[in-house]
Length: 337
Length: 207
Image 1 (cartoon, helix red, strand yellow):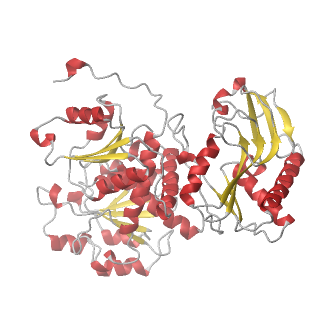
Image 2 (cartoon, chains in turn brown, blue; image 1 turned 90 degrees about the horizontal axis):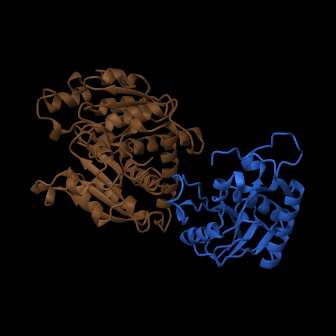
Image 3 (spheres, chains in turn yellow, red; image 1 turned 45 degrees about the vertical axis):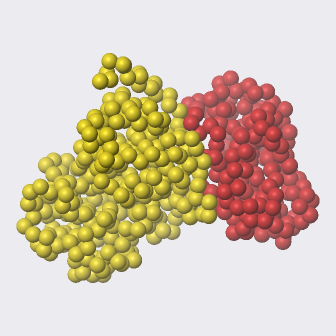
């Protein structure tokens, strides 16, 4: 694994290796000395061309716990706001000494473009590109689910998958890179995935995804889910009207107190107590009610903590390997403006 | 690696199952003698094959001196993320690190591994241990010392000193890790020495 761009690229052994490595990283995060020397002397650049606080902080904490040097770069107030191209930006960062570039970009496919273009030799980790993919979020969700499944079965999570689990992903599938990455990863790991969303918030071609689609959240909740993943209603990506009003969205698609009570009243297929997941930040009162947001079944904070472990695992796996793959030829001088 | 790790034609057995048992029993006696009893002793196995060896050693220690709590005094310390050759070879998934119930702080920690070669694995294990606590002392027990040290490290307890050439490969098979051997010999564990010409890639992984 030279880059991490999308969960759809991952093989099952690669996915399990990331989750197993993350398990060992989590053990480090529990001990007194929360530091490993695995990336000593390496430099990780967080190139965030779209606003993000939690993902950037999580990657920063992950890189620092592995002893890497971290350079944070955000679009605001940088040369990008003066119109510098992505190519010139990343080549400048590599000239400064970047070994890995963790990139969030507003444009779908930006991470793939960076990895395949030959602009840089660095490892590329996709921290979210447009509405396309957010692989580390899906990996931390799978890691969280696997821990709960293993605890329920009374076994250690290493090497196990999510077979037998049913996960319902609810809300704005159309704009959600979290949902896309999760669908492929959860299906790869053997979980059953149901997407529950209004027709206006489902993308074209969703029928080809390895997931069942329903227009009724209530129907999906009848099907013994082990986890309900509530997506954030992304106001910033919604130019048009995708649903009539916030109130109607909440009534039909929100995890209201009544729905949460129904979820709590029955066991899931694999977990006795179904979980409520959310990639954060939560819109309380819109897609999730206070009771569900503050419930012990809500894994939001656990997901955040697991995010650091998963990102440590990814940085270790992409950076600590032989670069036997022939390095792309150094960019020719005439390519430079 | 790529090649089959099964014993090639040239492999000769240098320790049989029974000899491995006797070596571990002797090492256990030596540990107790050097430590003047079992007080404050903790064994930490280095994955993979150091882990079952540490378990076996602790069982022997308990048999010799029942005051030694075999269950609470064995742990595992993975060195993957402390290695100095992380950037060579394929990406590695770390093995679990498990702390013993007996705290490491102030204990006499005996690191246990199968083969002592360059000493680099032990160097990594010392760093890993320092991040887990502050032992009163750290000792090293190995089943086989094959020489060719690249660092100033030596073992305190050695099952067998095995003069080798760097062209040879020492293979340790333990039933806990490698499973029962096909071929049906009654000897399940073995230390073998083989010509590494066919397996140079595998030999570089040894510590």
